[in-house]
Length: 410
Image (cartoon, rainbow, N blue to C red):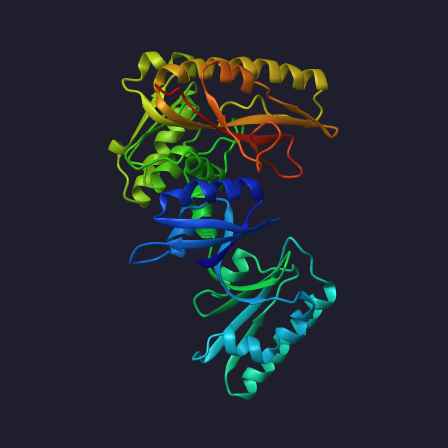
């Protein structure tokens, strides 16, 4: 087996769940070696002639910032500074035949912390390497950052994958791992398919494409399956499903503007990639009437439903509790419809809001009601106490909690 590293994004548990949802589709075996903070180390053995194509795997992911391969281990953490000498780094980790070498260091805690003195010593080592290379007549550039790790943007803009090396050092429980970044998140593409679209509606909520992609992956959607988003908004979930290779998606929304926005955005998407109108269908419908309109059952439902009116921050607790009550009713009614339109063993990945005020949380507590309808909740030790995966920024008044469910089996 080979060891690979994954640097996880804003919600590490959610990002790890996404990775683990895709790994079973690969022809091979895997084992989690280390999982702590924003780092996931995997032992992977992939069968087949081409082995593990890490760059292609990275293209599928929405929640991972960097991926790479572990190329060395240091057994004694106390000897890290003495082991990671300029000579060793030059010989083992940096390109040997390049006339211009660009390199940088990224430090990560994977179950054990590193000292500030080590960080300073490593920076000095980088300068020594740069000076040594220049003495040999080679051009050298040492890329640094204010943070302990180089971001995907810094790695990408400085072409550290193509023309140099982003050397990643992981302080794990028992040892130190050293790896090289092989691919970073395609931040330019995500930006293009977010801000480059012709239509958006901030009032109805804007699901980030990265989260939509994670949700489609959590549903383990297959190319020949039909995916439905019954609250399609501006079409972000449908877009990401199509970009991941789903050949047929259906969207619906009670808002005529949302239907028009989705149609315009998917029409634009078709001008950017190989997608045409036969790949999608957009319906104008209240979710509660959807079973009367749909002509066939669907395999997968992936959606962020209406999360309530926009919040200003001055709302009372009673106001938030009323939001919870009204949305709970809408969501339960939606699942009653899902019963009718979802195929046996079909998957549902859905966002439920968690409102925040004065350090209090007001979640939507309907999972027991959904279970009574025959749906099964998929949860793990990595999910929240309610069985979902939280995603939020510190300043958000409404957090997203993503739940994975499956329908009835025969």
